[in-house]
Image 1 (cartoon, one colour):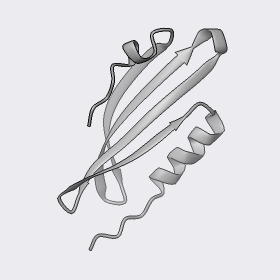
Image 2 (image 1 turned 90 degrees about the vertical axis):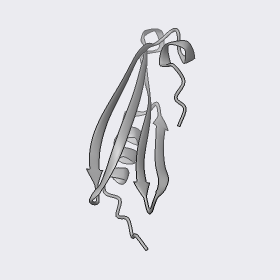
Image 3 (image 1 turned 135 degrees about the vertical axis):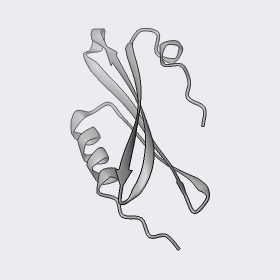
Image 4 (image 1 turned 60 degrees about the horizontal axis):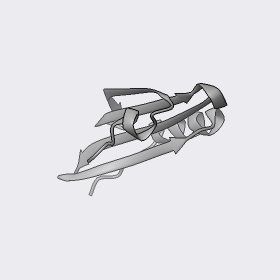
Length: 86
């Protein structure tokens, strides 16, 4: 997976990229979060990449938004996900 450098992608934003591990439905995910705050517009844009290996394949969920309510609902939906392995 290739992530662009947040500072070059959004030079007018205050950019933060974090990486953490999280377990969702007993599956370990690597979660890369990119947040960009734009002072002039008072807007926060986020990209969350949930990456896991399932059945020897890379699986990724991407959440991108600029609205706090939508962001919270999308993240809750991902965290509440159930996976059926065959």
